[in-house]
Amino acid sequence: MDEKRKLTNEVGAPVADNEHSITAGSRGPVVMHDVWLQEKMAHFNREVIPERRMHAKGWGAYGSLTVTGDISKYTRAKVLQPGKKTDLFIRFSTVAGERGAADAERDIRGVACKFYTEEGNWDLVGNNTPTFFIRDVHNFSDLNRAVKRDPRTGVRSAQNNWDFWTLLPEAFHQITIVMSDRGIPASFRHMHFFGEHTFAFYNEKNERVWCKFHFHTQQGIRNLTDEEAEKLCGQDRESHGKDLFEAIERGDCPRWTMYVQIMTEEQAKNHYENPFDITKIWRHREFPLIEVGVLELNRNPENYFAEVEQSAFAPAHVVPGIGFSPDKFLQGRLFAYGDAQRYRLGINHNQIPVNRAKCEVNDYHRDGAMRVDGNYGAAPAYTPNSADVWSPQPEVTEPPLDLEGAMYRFDPKDDPTDDNFRAGGNLYRLMTEDKRKLLIENTARNIAPVTHNVKYRHAVHCFLADGEYGERITKAMELDFAKVKELAKLDNAGLIEATRNP
Ligand code: HEM
Image 1: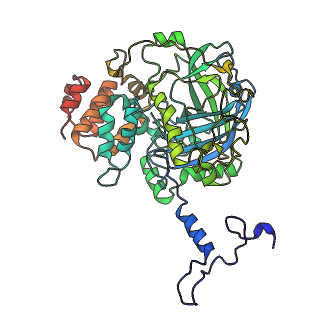
Image 2 (image 1 turned 90 degrees about the horizontal axis):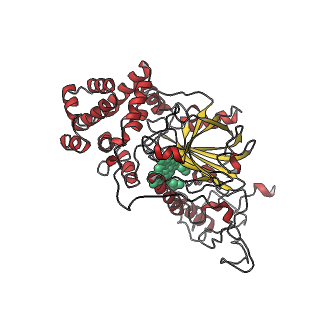
Image 3 (image 1 turned 45 degrees about the vertical axis):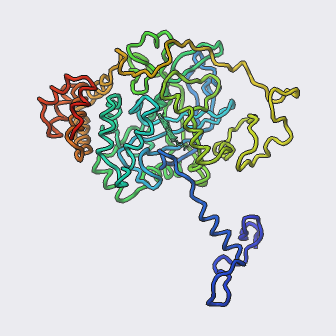
């Protein structure tokens, strides 16, 4: 038989029989002697690895980014220079559902991009919304506990979800997006995605600007209604994954146009709200989209576990020319991902082929479980070393950033420029009547099982964003509008106190 078709054990020795255990007598018990059976069972028992704490359900594909614009005056990043084409891998995900959850749920979608640049991997780990629910890292684990399963019942709880969301008014804009027509994308191909945070660019002269990343689908936006999604989930839990895989297989390669928004350091100092607050957006009319290039997905992975499940993205992975901003929320992410992956996949997870950089990696990290790349052989293990091996490159040092103020636990709500309802109100006013109607209906359906006090909190937030939005949602939730208007006179602490009891 062809060598390649021969069954072997894990160290290459031929296996004689893969269906009949070795037993003592034809009707007798299995014996330890069947080492192939032991190996087979023991491996199977250990095949499941921890799922991602959130974004557990996901699908991936390979492709490229081709730069068609010219933003070289803002960034020195080689991946973003005119004409450059860079290979990439993307993993799309839902957030709240576990690894076996249905795709077509009302939820935000994660979009994690790994650009294999010549200067190292750049991971842009974003979502399909330009903003986020919360802005302090402290709230992140709680957000996920509120949207995931209730500790007592083990089922997801609309009460927990809405209670948490409405106690944090900064979530309002994101809630409006999630409850809108865009809350259930028809597929990953038919949605935009965003880096969300403010990042930094710096150029060859080490001049810094702030930037935001946007990717607009060239397939057009397509969404599902609650009714369509409910039906689909009943028929096919993998609708997004199949759609992406089949489109790429038939050569219908999805594309997104990449844009950036740019804000100078001076503009940031004078901006009317905190430009580093992820719950805020930069309005396009003030900070226009600048076209950068085209992102295309054109190759499916060969193996789901090896390439999609084992992929690992970290916002900490940037390349020269791209940096972080003082966004407090981004700072927390810089730690969290690598930490989670060291647990989920192990300390050497960046050697897994899908995660491995395409350029040379010389980091001095040694040893650790599952080190499989030769461990740098006899090269020095310390730095500085007289052999002058793998020296730091000061020319990629980021420009200095001026900071000011005392070390303290600041509450953004104490900032007089902080307005949590402006963006959600603007979004409502931008919507056509059919979209407003969907938003109101989706919200009313989603919040229906929740107690009245929490519904009042949300109605007040809607009213503070836009009078009509408040009035319509109040009616749809069958609440008293006079009471909503009275509650709206309270400050946030007063509103929480007045709506504490169901
Ligand atoms: C402080 C806030 C946040 C923390 C602590 C956090 C933490 C995490 C962790 C621990 C994972 C699992 C990583 C893994 O096991 O590989 C994850 C996944 C993910 N997060 Fe976050 N996250 C935060 C906010 C955000 C935001 C604002 C976005 C979008 C802009 C985002 C997008 C994603 C995506 C897309 C994934 C899935 C990555 C993949 O496909 O492997 N996260 N997050």
